[in-house]
Image (tube, rainbow, N blue to C red):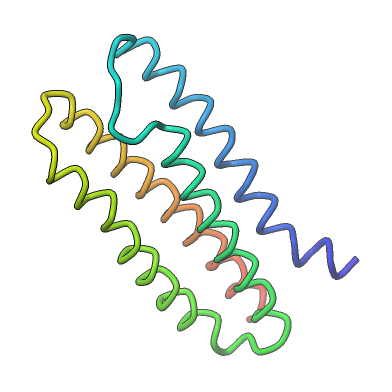
Amino acid sequence: MKTLSKLRAVWETLILGIITYIIHKIIVAIQWPETTFLFSLETIYMYFIAIAATIALILSILNEKNNYIVGYTFLALTTIQMASSYYFIYEFDQVAKSDLKIEKINFFIIFVLFLAIETSTTARMLNKNQ
């Protein structure tokens, strides 16, 4: 039972990520059917789902062992996520392409979405401890 509660945050992150990917993919297919992106939605979503699920797993484990450092760990892991996400932004800046504006907007929407998912998961963990 404890394992299921520990993995609940990870499963929620995965399910929300997959649902938002499907919705986002449909919107992009309808709005910009002929557009090819530098990084596909699949690549960006796989990256963010993997990072978010890893963060959720680490925070769940820490929440069981030492709940006092969950908030600080969240801040550190989110900072690392932002730094690693810079790779995508750097690649966008290196290419002069007319569709890049759409791709940048897509990237930041996905980034903010997963940041919100991670933040709400962490907030629920911290509120449970009070």
